[in-house]
Length: 137
Length: 491
Image (cartoon, rainbow over all chains, first blue to last red; front, side, top):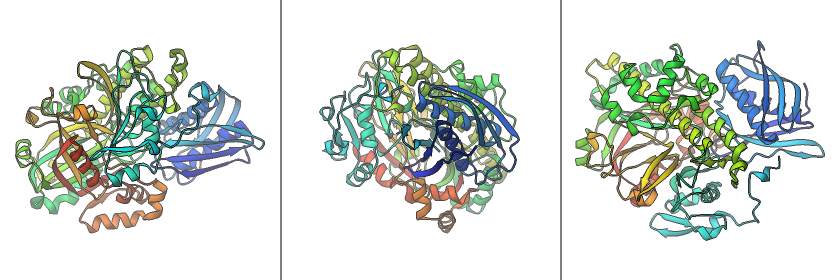
């Protein structure tokens, strides 16, 4: 899925801040997943043999984004795979259903341990959605 | 949900640093009157250089936010290595009344019971210097380090893992043979926080932790071979078995993915339940629950369980280091545990007949000579406090003081504290240069990633000597010995 979105890493003392922009909420969550994957591994996995179904609910959309990233971090740590392709079946401010596809990376890059609420706020504007998320590394 | 339901919308307020004033030799304070929602003052132990560094990030604001927590008492404290964290600053201490106050996972941090232990050999470094590289090599082979690298051994069975969480170091020593009774005696809280319950720990946390017991992990975790190069308190050092020129081992790691998952789980839980308890906080990462509530009690049990995992992680690594030592230096090359301290925990402690939940995030307990429960070797001296420096710099051993009870809820700093982002550190010095600098100092380095070396370079951290000096001047703990590294195994 191409979101015409953006994800990038920004400076933060001690940890990593992921900057996100996308025209849609699903796109924002996809960019978050892709950004996390690029932080975890030097290169995208060559094969996407691992397929996981994810269903999440949260108190609000900010908490849902934290839960989404935490879910991907948990899946990576327990499967040894990096997930950078996503199919969203449903996404609402407080719930999502998605499938994540991933594979074993050639080289790991950064140990990401958790997503945080630190300074997090998802904002909706004329051009879509934006957010920045601090990740504990 | 409107995020303001989780935070008070306060009128614009000036930066916390504008409310800061020096109130002692190495003490600064933001008074309670600075913000209407502050319940106690915020005090920071620092000298002029460190307080200037502290003001470069938002840690002062965060400390002021901590002072708003329901049930917080006396004052909240910032250690001289304080820097911006999530909710609580790293290097922050806050105590809440267990009956009326809250417990906040942000006040412990993600890496529950990240901590340090110091092992003393009976060897002089000079007599074994030619073998250091082999020792470092053996240790790096025996102990997985780096992200996601699990133990090469099969993961613990769930029933064993549950025992680790519930019983801590006594279990792994007595049932699994990973140490001695002296290790139990020389670990904070005898290696087992009371109140731990594996039933409060999620299956996800168990899954993350099952294969990680006995692993260093990445980031700023490390294992160092060091030599004692200065003794400040000769008589105390002699009593503890510390001498100049002695080879020692410092281990810094925590509860790995298990602890991180526990923190994530309960921040999310409390974030969702705060409104039910009519709680609001100025920062969502300060999500909390009344200590006496089901959520509060359950988190405390899970936190204690994760802390016990952290103690056992360092104990298993100790066992593996002892085996590596013996393989290279012979069976008589022994390593005795001086002490193991936690620096991310919440503990129920009594101060002035009040039962308090003391949150220490990037801060170390520092009990004085009068405290109960100290190891036999420490009677009359105080609790050992180990302060690791950054790679290539000195580490310190200190002794807690009785005075620190009234100064910081018996707390001291935990390290040097970051002064620079990882990106800035990598731009300032390439990893291969850091490796070369360490090697030119005669330090054997085992780290697979030059990038991680750059991120953890000494210039990314505050001056540990200055940080420890402030702790000493403030009376929180007193300097005992200084150690310099001769070998590093880096995550």
